[in-house]
Structure formats: structure tokens, C-alpha cells
Image 1 (cartoon, rainbow, N blue to C red):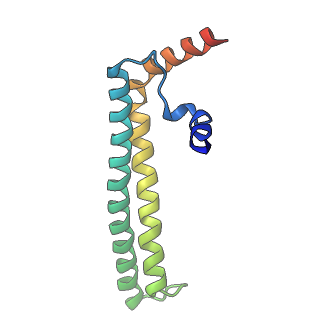
Image 2 (cartoon, helix red, strand yellow; image 1 turned 60 degrees about the vertical axis):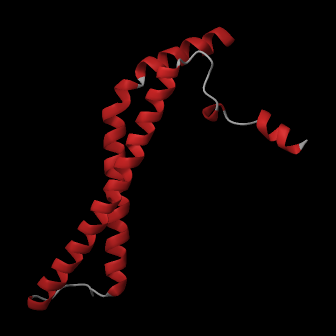
Image 3 (spheres, one colour; image 1 turned 135 degrees about the vertical axis):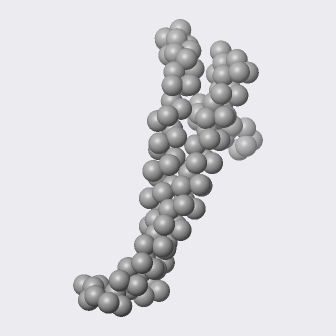
Length: 117
């Protein structure tokens, strides 16, 4: 009984409208996958970049006085911060570059919403 009630109240985001063709659903899936893949790639590149920048800062810190300490905690923060920034940057960029593929699908959804009202 409880499972059925949860299914009826599910978000419309999980159930594509019937007006979408199989090609539209495939396009949405491809765009979603491309955004996720670039997000993970950005996380990897950003993490390595953050750790590299931390290592370079430690190298510079040997010869110059830095206003902050560089230790294992700052290395982890650089790694995680770089990964978060890289993931955000690349996934956002990919989404902005691929949104044009979704405009026809948005128009179909807009027409369907007007018909329902």
C-alpha cells in the first residue's frame, strides 16, 4: 500500500511525458551523461591541479616566507577544493554548451503544459 502511494507522488522529473519521442529521451540521456562525464573529468583534473599548486607553493615556501603554513591539512584542502572547482567548472560549461540540444524538448514540454491547463 505504501509503495503505491509513493509512486503516485513521484516527481515529474523522473517520468518523461508521453509526448516525447524515443529520440528526445535519448537526447536527454546523452546530455545528462555528457554533463556527468565532464564533471568527473573536471574533478580529476581539478584535484591534480590543486595538489600540484600546493606542491609548487611548498617549493616556493622553501625559499620565501609564506604568510600561511603548508602541511597535510592544506594539501587535502587543495586536493578537495580543486576537485570541487574543476567539477563545477567543467560540468557547468558542458551543460551550457549542450543546452541548445534541449530547446526543442523544452518547447514540447511547454506545449504539453498549456494543453493540460
